[in-house]
Amino acid sequence: MNTEKMQAALLYGERDLRIGFVNKPQIDDDEVLVKIRAATTCGTDLKIFQRGYVNRVIALPTIFGHEWAGDVTEVGDDVSTMSNGMRVRAGNSAPCLRCRMCQKGRFNLCEDMLWLWGAYAEYIRVPARTILVNSQEIPENVTYEEAALAEPLACVLHGVEESDMALGDTVVIIGAGPIGLLHLLLAKRIGVEKTIMCDIAEERLIFAEKLGADATVNSSMTEPIDAIRALTNDKGADVVVEAIGLPATWKQSLKMVSKGGTVLEFGGCPPGSHIQVDAELLHYDEVTIMGTFHATPTHFKNALNLISSGTLNVKPLITKRMPLTRIKDAFTDLISSKSDLKIAIIP
Ligand SMILES: [Zn+2]
Ligand SMILES: [Zn+2]
Image 1 (cartoon, helix red, strand yellow):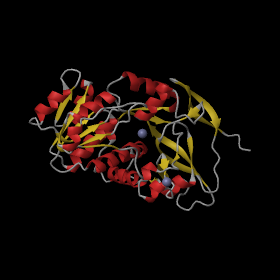
Image 2 (tube, protein in one colour):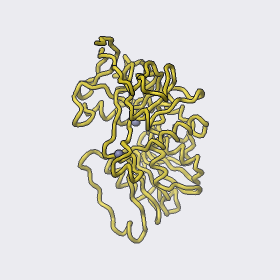
Image 3 (cartoon, rainbow, N blue to C red):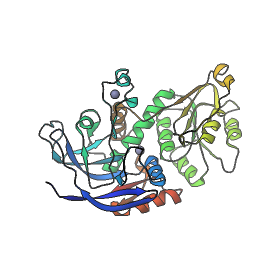
Image 4 (cartoon, rainbow, N blue to C red):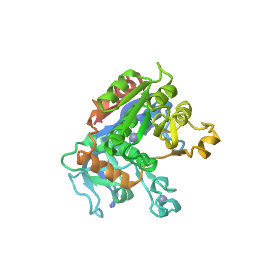
């Protein structure tokens, strides 16, 4: 019986996050153990911290965190694709490849998804399925914290792909947080003609401009729908991305889109949320309204490749580094500050 302990951040309830010692995970023959070298904070984790639960089935206290990268320290006898000391990242989801959704290629909607939590700790056990379908060796030129960002970037790649964002488009992004900014970086790379960022925090809009936003709208000072109309010759944008997750901004996005355009409702709203849609918008204007959720293993792989090739520079999104012992301060900072985007937690 292994009694070795590791340090981990345990969530006991709403805003009650404490550092404790738990049993270091033991691996089976088809698994690996990874020493986490960086785990980045994410809006989802922030929601979990504020609400005090991961989901209805996981019992508290629990270790959460899902964007991470590290070094393999133990390898099960049956694992041939990873070796000791290898720098790796793995996704927080591993589709089954067998269910109805997987068979249709909709891997992000897998009906038997294996989720992986527990990045805010010294070590993480990576299950066989995750090793098989959603893990990669990290190229030498990519840091651990950059590799951790493959997760949010994968989700953004999925959304942008589905939205058919194209060369020459005008794109509005509501929300200049990490997800909105990743959409901005990608839109610029695709070669859209004009990117317009909306947010209520001036600091974030200034940062968005530094990252290449062509125009910004501060929705706390200007009526955002009128402002977008004015910036698009009253036509609206080809693609509008909502990257906040509130019914109010979902509704706004519908009024910012042009004829024939697409609204990508990227941010997940609280459970039970509803919005009304003008039927004429769908019929006469042929507007597409879509949501996307999470990403497929291919998006994860492409995300890391885009970072490694230098196509997308995600470094500016990491605004701070903090040790695991200060994780509670990290989340408190994310709530109070407008300039912190992602904090890399270093165990
Ligand atoms: Zn995330
Ligand atoms: Zn499946």
